[in-house]
Length: 291
Image (cartoon, rainbow, N blue to C red):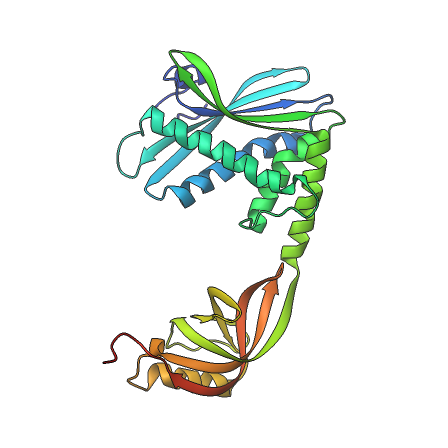
């Protein structure tokens, strides 16, 4: 067995320190396919590592999966996450327990979006959807299975369950179907035209880019979305006029507004990029430096 970050070489040695951990239990009526078996654990581990990166950027986590028990119809594993302050010591057990509990609750909430028709996790990317499906595939393929994910810690050497998520075969199949629908929606993109909208720069770039490709620039069109999105140039003329304002004038590009026609690329109904097809006017915007 590979030695982990704390020097442990066995499950017993690792658990002797009583770390907070995640318990994954598969209760199945039939044997599970090897690919579904592996995916159930690796997808959960991947989601946990992503959760740490997104929510605790000053931490790093290295997790190991220990298959604790295998018996007819049941497989139980402990995912033990060693959580570190960046460049510092292992996090206090109490803080680690809170993190593990929060992860399990959030993971359950995200999967729960898909438990009903039309439910969608608004933050899910295609990689997340793959992990969700991989995690449930073993149960969904079983005629009468259950999967349970728990956040566990030890208090006075006694295991305590702080949070729990459970899916049976029926719920897993419904959830996977809705996840598949969401994945198909993300795969499909549409284009919608908006004439004469005001565009401002969030990030500019003096470099050139191939027409029709996303530039390194990001712009905001508040009448469409409050978020800044990548800018795409649809013609040389548009690019030359806008790049002139960036490269050749002394005016601050961030104090200028561009009255443009745009073709908005959308995915799952959400704008993801702006392609400028025509530039009508450039205007100076009010700013704090004005007297």
